[in-house]
Every structure is written in structure tokens, then in C-alpha cells.
Amino acid sequence: MLANFSGRQVQVGALSKELQLDATSLKELIGFIVDELPRWRDDPNLRDRYEPAETTLTSRLCGHLNTVARLTPGWDTFQFRTEEPDEARKGRKIDLVGAPCGPVVWIEGRRCTQFDTLLPIECKRLPTPDDKRRDEWEYVINRSGSTGGIQRFKAGDHAAMHTVAAMIGYVQAESPAIWFGRITGWIKSLGLTHAGWTNSDLLRIDPADARPDVTIYRSTHVRANGLPEIALHHLWIELPGRT
Picture: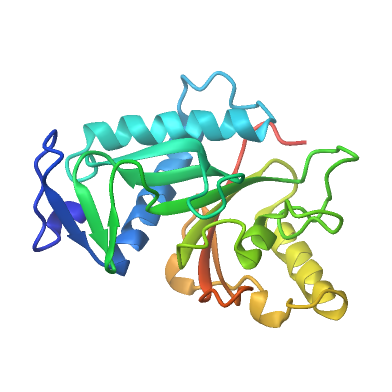
């Protein structure tokens, strides 16, 4: 856990203290979310676990993550927020972010306060809601707009100031394996019809990520406007009451 990192200077409630982290720490933050996803889903107090709305699901998840972080030594200097304005594109909002809570965090030379984002997270339902204004491919792209999940990161509309981000998939129908195959097909198809999309955008499996309760994929994407590549961690959780 992060509490074991050497060189860490933390005093809860003392905003002048600072915390030095490296890129590995973001992976630990992602690991914290992975561990808590099934606990959030299975919490008997989650009365609206069957709620289909992304915003409701993400709000409930945010509340759970904040509660656990606050009560867990080593994580009590971190917080989560929903609908957070993107740091580079103020008109855009990130579904969920991980951020410092108190101490200033330095990570890879970047200074982050409690008002900054450490980890941007996009949340999507699988399948996309049946709405004529939305694209069934929305986890990847909106073919008539700019609201696709991976699309936003590739375009720099989300997380332009970051090189690591995450996507949470709420699997409400079928299985992760089916969605993996479907999304693979969509990305391969985009490589034939949309500039900038190639097979290098495909989701991939890392055997080290395998676990029974959360499905994890990774992907790396070349971005527009001279931005460096961004690495995405895809965290998929199967929800109850699926049809």
C-alpha cells in the first residue's frame, strides 16, 4: 500500500506537508479501486444497485471509495470526486477522479493539491443506454459526435495533462468476454474508416491482472495535437440484475 513508500511525508490535516510519489503509485491507486469495485457492488446497503443510470452508479461508487479511503491508514490522504472539470478542457467534465486529500502530492515532477486530479476515470455502461442520441459503440467512440470513452482520451478532450487514466465498465448485460470481442471488432473497423485509429488501440489482456471478480484490460493510445501516449486501465465489473 502507499503507506509503505519510502520518502513519504504525511500528516493528516496538515496541508503544508508533502508526499513524493512515482508512476507506480498510480497503479496502486488503480489497484485500490479494483479491490473495492466488488465490495461496493455487493454491499447490502446499496439499495439502488440495479439502478441503470451511469451518474447514479458512479456517485454511489464515489461515496464508497471515499468512505473506505478515509477509514484506511495509507489511503486517508486521498479522495474521489465526480463530475470534475477537466484541467485542460474546462468545458469537459470527468466522470470520476482520484485526488489528494490534504497533503500536496508530487508525482513525476507534477505538483498536485487537493484541487487537482491524480487519476482521471471515465465510466461507461455496457451496453450503452438505448437512446437515439447515443451510439452503441460509445465505450470506444461516438461516430457522430465526441462523447466516446476512448475517443475522448485519444483526442485530448480528457486528461490532456495525464499519461495514465482509467475506464470503468458497468457490465449490465452479457459477459465481459462478449464485450471484449465486440469492442475489438469495433476498433478494428475504425482502423479502416477513421483516421488515427489502428490495431495499436486494441484492448489487451495482461495475465498478471487476472482475478475472478473484476475483469481488467489495458490499452495504449497515440494522441492528437502532439500529446504523449496515454495508457488506459479498463476495469469492468458485472452488476446484478442484468437482463
